[in-house]
Image 1 (tube, protein in one colour):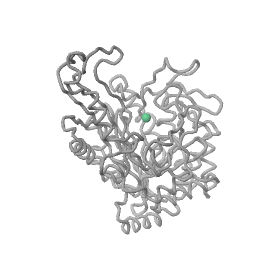
Image 2 (cartoon, protein in one colour; image 1 turned 90 degrees about the vertical axis):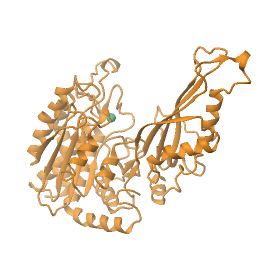
Image 3 (cartoon, helix red, strand yellow; image 1 turned 30 degrees about the vertical axis):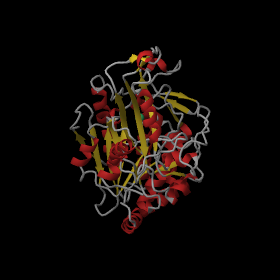
Image 4 (spheres, protein in one colour; image 1 turned 60 degrees about the vertical axis):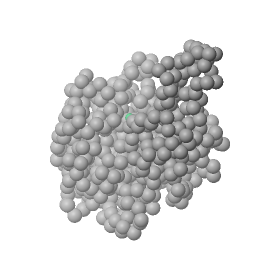
Length: 480
Ligand SMILES: [Zn+2]
């Protein structure tokens, strides 16, 4: 009974072919949540035929959860309680996928057939997220076997089938089943590593908010020769409104929407993290963004406002007229410390103060930022357990640059959140030729077995240290 034995058992599931067999079965379910009617049977069957028997075999009690917002996107909550006094971890995954787009895949590949080629497994969901939660369940099984049927901690599992449709109902499910999801720690795997060869731990995600700026001057355009010079041009006014929000070097100019500072723990973690560098990555513009920060600090540790699209008149077929209106579709990404609900008021006040009261602001989707405090004892504990399992250092990413529904776990459920991605940037997630790298899956199995082993060994001590740390910190336990 040893940690090394547990890790060896986990890796053996890959070497023996068992992991690929299970993954092939799982990939074959056409669980496209963006097509909930066509996929309804598969969405149900993935849970009933794959997840339920797997979890029951590990000693879990499995509950079907009706989705209160969209009943076509079911979920399950499973629990395995050894002793209520032990620490409890909540694991999360999603069994739905984006559309297959079969015609875009390279010859010889098909989204719903697992294809084994070199060091890759191709198939829709291999990276996002079937392959990733399969790694975690296989590692859990290995630790259970190595510990002879006793983990030394309790486990709860939440699997949803609607993540790619924006997780409708997930928040309501978490609120309704708060007791069934109660835990000391949250661990999940989704998204990419910072690079394929760099095992990564991330602690949350940037938040996001979409908003549209519209300037409607007139119902239609007017001849530029007859009226130009006497009519305000909405395209020019919109350009100035945008320029007031972000300066010519990409620096956010809205008071209160720039973070106060970059936390030292975030700066320290990012010192060694690369940005881009892949074959298909663009060259970074060193002059762009907040002065005094490195490019990776600007992406991971700062707030950013982008114009995603803009229009006035008839682009592609310009006519000699002053356009009647102009529209810009904007998006802001933000870090912990900036309240996403504050953004519309700040932008509105800024526009008004700069003479753009006539620019209308309409807010779309929004998601708050989350980040477990990098100085939480859970973070160093996880980094150590993962590094020991692999015999190599782990990259700490304080949060993803992109966005995840992590606020539901971090804020609604109040959990410290650890994310261990088993994928990488070029995995074809949400595109053609999606794949999982076997070496990354192998390391994932080892790291997760190491984490689960450590949870049984030292979970209770770290849980208490985290609570003391959170109480002594001025911040909330789930945020830095
Ligand atoms: Zn996805």
